[in-house]
Image (cartoon, rainbow, N blue to C red; front, side, top):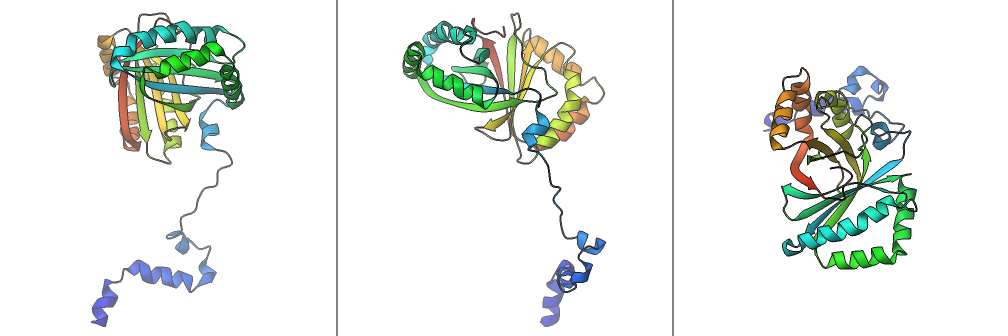
Length: 270
């Protein structure tokens, strides 16, 4: 019985016991077979992925609207949001505002940029609390919503900064929930892959979350229509290197979602 028991014990058990009982081999190659060394980083992952010379912070908002209230909600947003965007008193910009066409229905998506990072965000929030028009807007908006959520984002250094576009366009927001610990790897692959998606100027912006759902990536694309989207995406597969980027990034994803969105009249991205 003892012989059978000893044979059932993995050989690695004996090797590890040997290491523990022989401290002189602490720095030997032998111990390196069993001890994983952590490569210390001198900076946060976010600082390695974003544009350090700029302090842009983004907020993305998802509002699920009561179906019967969507038109009134859109009208309310078109009346109020552009005034905040145009007022230099608030250090923020409305990047884009949309309704979801395909994906989660009766949904509005708003993307804001805060030049100056978290201090700018705090300044805007404090000033808006004193804005009676905005307070009335939030109260009226609350009657129309089923739910809402938001995320604070940074932009990838290798993506374009979103700038206003003339339309008409449709927009695709592709959202990826990554496995924890894989954001740097994702960024390394996409830093090379993004050149394959620039030919038709379809790349609008790329972001990763800092607050809210973590390890979340959002890629924003613009197309003339659904057929143009299909042709553009198919064309990427004809370029050398694109299939490799897809092959290596797909295993990093836990969940992914695509929304096709239509810009509101007030959206700088048309």
